[in-house]
Image (cartoon, rainbow, N blue to C red):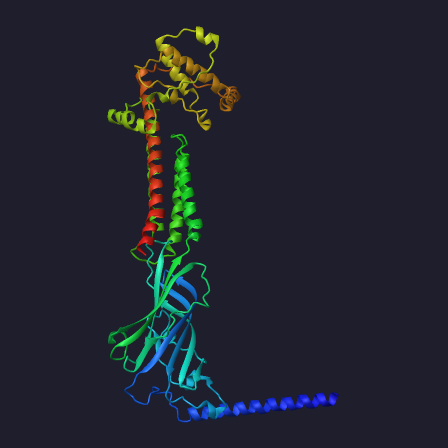
Length: 511
């Protein structure tokens, strides 16, 4: 039984070798027949006046990269070329029904296809690959599919960056032959996207393949040249920039907005504003690295520039408000310009809902019986009030205690001196219970044994007019600070709505 099995496999192997040898001999005879007198230097036509018609098709496999700085797009494509070679026809019946033959591309005449808008070296512009092969049909049709990675120039418009759409083209054409020698035509079906791999940065919106004819100025050869244009429209995926640039910028705007809630005499507002400004500048540099050096400013750059401008204005206004508040502590206290005070009372106070009497301290605190029964003279009343309002200015700065709101808004107010002093005394007793007051008292007790208290002259009487001026300066500072907050909030809302919503919407409508 084993002998019969061995004989069977020997016969089968012999037949297979004989058939393979026969096929090899057939292909060898066919090659000798086709290429014994074939000249790859001349066009494959019997009549010199006839043109070689080359059909061109294209497969887009992947968009590898778009360098906005250098304006170069890199794509992976397959370029398919077919033409009729009159010297490469045979009868399949004479060659064991062989209908196709695969040969190296160096053995045949090839169209001198060139990428005219190539961004690589001159040798990289030709549509050719060393070691590539092509297929010859028995009817003389030659099919050549070339895999290429093409770097081509692409004008980049960054006006709507990062919501931009770019249209890039690749131009194919014969480098030497004009339309009378080599005529390029499109294969049916258009661009093939069956092998396309999605890109992480761009979405492919549309592809198109069309033919045009240009004059001799484009190429070294004379006459008109047919050009095949491969056009692709891509749109940037903006989610990366939404999270890395836009969202942090909006958060910084909110941080600047929150700084307005700090008391107007605190210098931390300036520190926050400077920190936000420097961070925005770093984001601006990040954008500048990804866009070309052109006169076109991207939308995102405009947005950050406007935010930086508003931030600078907020810093200027914070400095101005601090300067206004500082005037209330000068001695003598200067008078508020009448025009400024009038504008604050009649215009800004209504917009910011800040009544002039809001600066008066109106706590409803319980008063002790001895405070109720203690009489006050006119001179003692104003002197005592001024002393109470400024006694804790240096001690309670860290607790954000402002005594300016205890002052009356005008001399003609209906608030009596006794009620003012009663409220101030009640507020003074509240301050005594605070830690800052206890620390101040404790520190004074420790130093009293070593350092004797300085000898000072009795405090000069403070007139009601001075106290009214202090209140007016505080009122102006608060009103201007609130107005700056409202202006910043409205400007930021308009900026975000216009730059990030309306302008990109117009771009989509135009496209």
